[in-house]
Image (tube, rainbow, N blue to C red):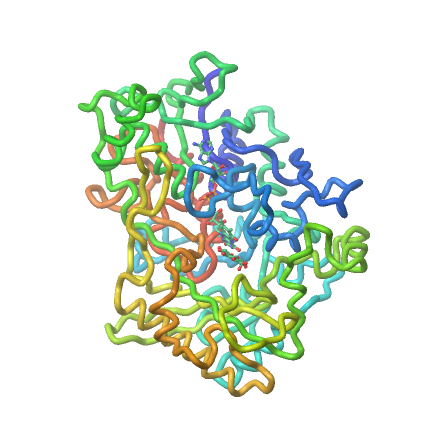
Length: 538
Ligand code: 6FA
Ligand code: ABL
């Protein structure tokens, strides 16, 4: 049966939008290409040590690092060549869950937002009320495996950093550090799936369909009438809209861009690739109806570089290698199973910090640091103690000037076409400055040794040789940028230009990356987008 709203994709953007629309009494169909994730949603992917509970890999925060080392890895989108979550909850079900309430600057006109978006506070407050952040996720309120926090604090304090509760003052992002904050709830993955989706599911006017892949929107010129899917259970795979209905794409920075290309919306080179595909080509509207918009341009992602250290006080937790199989140390497993407390109640990060930096081109750029036990890779010829390793990931944050382009290839796989990292020389020099600040502080902390790069490689040489594919921080935004006609893909109400009733609400409309890991900003944005869409006359 036709509905008022079809929302495509159940990531942080889609779930929150769908919940607010259904709360307002609209009939809403949420379509997700992937399957269930957490136990609450019917997910069953478990380690042996979790058998007998309904806890899955996606529930247990301490299993986060195993997302990258588990050969089964069915949760990653196979047709996107960077990490993206293709299951209920999207990236929110597989991410590190670091959760920062957005700052005023994150939603400022200086950050590219239209003036009408700058009053984000009521929406951020609504988000905080539904999903409060916590920097003590273990159910007993205690913090575990905190050696890395203590060591890194010793490095930061002499450089003038202050200790704060980060989400208590989101605007305070210069020379501050604090405990990592998450959107875990009761020692388990929480996020929009455990909160907003549950209120939606309780409503009769809301429907969720999993394993349903949207290929394109059905449109007659500027009017969208439904979506075409791989579902063989409905006529022609089509889910229709009511007259006056709307489609909202929330399929992520890569997913929403691809649906637009397949719907004849975007740059001509991308639509021509669709035209050449034997299945997707014939589904395109006639060329006279193609809509030329800069879909895929204006993309950014935080360039990130890892520094690896050892310190005698640190416990690398065996680099998280055993947490899924055969399982964490028996006492930690037992504690988590008994009360969702202990080391397994938290993802790997233990400390976050921010610093503003001047630079040669006069632009202020910020550095974010994330510290955690363990390391993805170590490069040194010197011996080191594997049980004491930890990583500081340095991200270039607000102030990034570099932009890239994403798109598809002839097989319709989505991918970066032009990498967005350190294209701008000011970006590169700022990140190098930040890395040097961290490296130089090492000498002040007794027992702390930097092992990657080691003392045979300078920071400049390390950055110059850094593999661009590992600079990816999975924070892709901007492929369907919000902004003025002629420059942007969506207007101030998130409506795709030159369409009557097609909207995008996900990371892809974000013009500039926020200070921190982005999903907090994306969730506040979805609260605000839903309000703006509901306020539009149909
Ligand atoms: N962000 C944070 O704030 N903190 C973190 O710690 C953090 N960590 C990670 C991380 O460790 C990894 C490995 C990744 C990949 C991302 C991380 N992020 C973190 C970023 C954050 O998760 C993303 O910014 C955020 O999830 C983006 O939210 P969106 O709503 O914009 O998009 P998603 O990709 O999450 O969801 C899209 C959904 O649409 C998916 O469920 C997908 O299956 C579905 N979909 C895609 N194409 C579709 C189609 N054609 N038909 C139907 N469904 C489709
Ligand atoms: C994020 O926001 C990033 O997108 C992730 O890349 C990051 O996790 C998490 N948060 C937590 O800080 C890292 C893992 O800790 C590494 O082990 C992994 O190699 C890396 O993601 C892959 O991008």
